[in-house]
Image 1 (cartoon, rainbow, N blue to C red):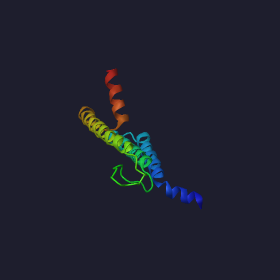
Image 2 (image 1 turned 90 degrees about the horizontal axis):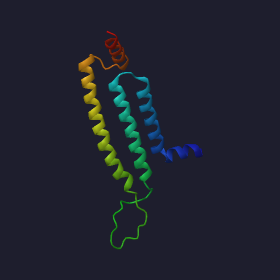
Image 3 (image 1 turned 180 degrees about the horizontal axis):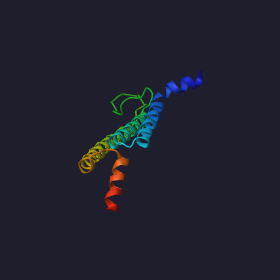
Image 4 (image 1 turned 90 degrees about the vertical axis):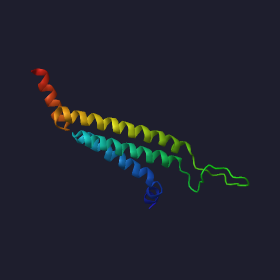
Length: 126
């Protein structure tokens, strides 16, 4: 029973690990480039969830000090601030990846990485 209670208390960490494995599985098993980008985005989301979960404190409040307040337990704001930067980087990498995928589709007519590699090897032998 204590294992179940521990899992329930740390459900954010469990969900983060499951999302990361789903994203990693998607990246490793699919040859479609668009599906690989989606898998990378799932992995990024799991990292964001993990960092925000690390910064959370049970019964903690926002780190705003009020006059006369003796509440000493605050939520750590640093992981949330770092995640904002991470989200900006993730969105820009996704946009860049999608633009490259569009260019690859225009050049080769497919999004399948195996087919692109076959087409590229055929072009160099001719």
